[in-house]
Amino acid sequence: MKHSSSIKIASAQYAFDRMDSLDEWEDKIRRLVQSGVETGAELLVFPEYAAIEMAGCFGPEIYGDLQKTLECVAGLTERRVQFYASLAAEHDVHILAGSGPMKSSKGRFVNAAYLVAPNGLVGCQEKNIMTPFEKEWGVQAGLQLKVFDTGIGRIGVLICYDCEFPLLARAIAEAGAEILLVPSCTERVSGFNRVRIGVQARALESGIVVVQSATVGEALWSPSIDYNYGAAGIYVPPEIGVSDDGVLAQGVVNEVGWVNGSIDLMALRELRDKGEMRNFHDWSLQAGAGGLELNVELVCLK
Image: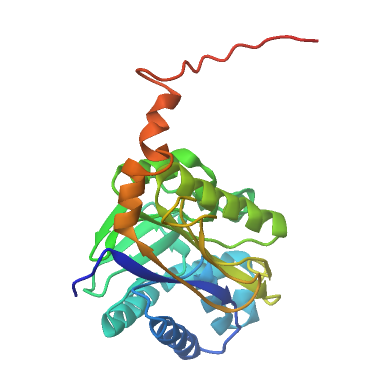
């Protein structure tokens, strides 16, 4: 399918349900994808740890135990990704599947998100910086950033906490990504706002569109996803001709549904070169040839 430079995106505000079978779970995802496609979106974004919901299909002995939950969901990785891939092909849409625990080649848990294209190709991005909670769970850091060259543009993925570290996003932007996806799962108001602020800052710094997806509501049956507070959003730099406030779309906190927006990638390219400010190009002025000296002097005034 041939695309213009304008991309329509739908980002999920996702609530967890406890279902009795994987068939029920697939029915839920199928309905959500259908409703997302009906918005006209070419890219659907699901949040961090959405895959944990699958453990609820296996009874309290599994979903009530964190380590058994991780093992169970990791074992379903192939089935989950293939299912999302079938939906992407059916609807001719790109989908960032909800992330979840996966066993790496070294037998350790990583938090991995899969980007599936309608042509059947699949890319995987692991989370790079672990939260204190993930360290307690035994989830370990990934080691590689990736940019996915797709039929709708070059896409990068930073999972939740990763977006709070500007050098990760900058590396992705300098590798050519114009769309950055941030699947998130936050328990508290403070956590949601940290990620949201990080998302908006990353859009400003590199002149790209950054899409946050969020988990919402309570899932008290699970020790890992029990409380969720969040909202999805689509953010760009605040620039004349793109957006005065940098917010293309933003959902109502803890409401279930899709948050939709369109972005003209050509307009973003133009503002990087000719915008009010030139944050993308002026990044190098922080240090290096012709830039600031970053040797910090401590001046005592007490």
